[in-house]
Image 1 (spheres, rainbow, N blue to C red):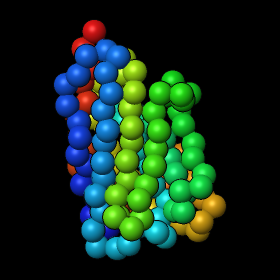
Image 2 (spheres, rainbow, N blue to C red):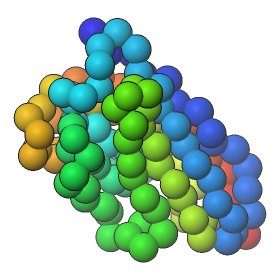
Image 3 (tube, one colour):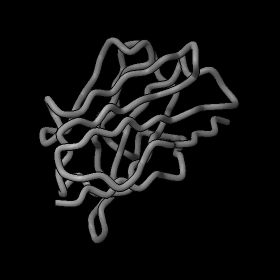
Length: 126
């Protein structure tokens, strides 16, 4: 079992930055592919960014490319999402997710992930 706890969300203004963290316990993350997803009211949960278990492969949803950066520190068992130039349309609950995977696998479908955090709210005002 892997337990995931997100932190770092909050209320910011358009153009600001936030850094989300996802701390894992129960297993070392070095053998898990991970991702950040978000869900806005009335919308389905969708991919923000995903990263392979060793961190060498990443994938981003088109609207966040060049603004968001996913990274991980396996020694600290922590996943990060650096969010810059935030827009009101980025407002959502952000979830981190993990699933066992080999080094070169990145998953973009939420159904591929076995473990989920409880989510952290990000609100961007205009």
